[in-house]
Image 1 (tube, rainbow, N blue to C red):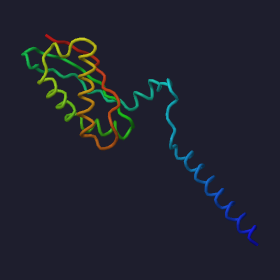
Image 2 (image 1 turned 135 degrees about the horizontal axis):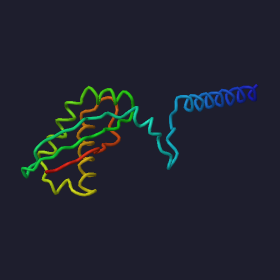
Image 3 (image 1 turned 90 degrees about the vertical axis):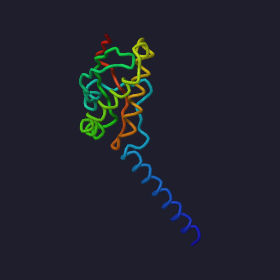
Image 4 (image 1 turned 90 degrees about the horizontal axis):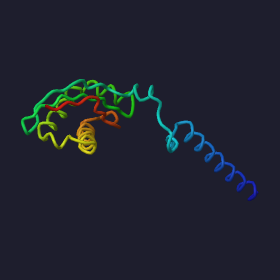
Length: 141
């Protein structure tokens, strides 16, 4: 009698464990891209928003004309970015208005600016987040 109860308990535990593993796998938990595996460009474009061209003055009275593409982490986040486009453009303009031209020069300057925009935009996002900000054109005069 005791052996039957122990076998039943072990069987139930194994079945619960198998069901949990199956649910974990089916729901996609823990699935990350393999190291070094890149998304296809089509996948990137599905979650990317063109912010258009922005022209504004810098802190040192120079003028910048700059364009951006912003990549989100999901289609829902992309939709939110499209709705918040005016807010994102405002963030970009206010960030630029507090910078001098030399701060945007070189690779490091542009990357630092992209990261600053990404951080500020993520602060207002509710449906996901920004993965990457791309400067697609840039002119300072």
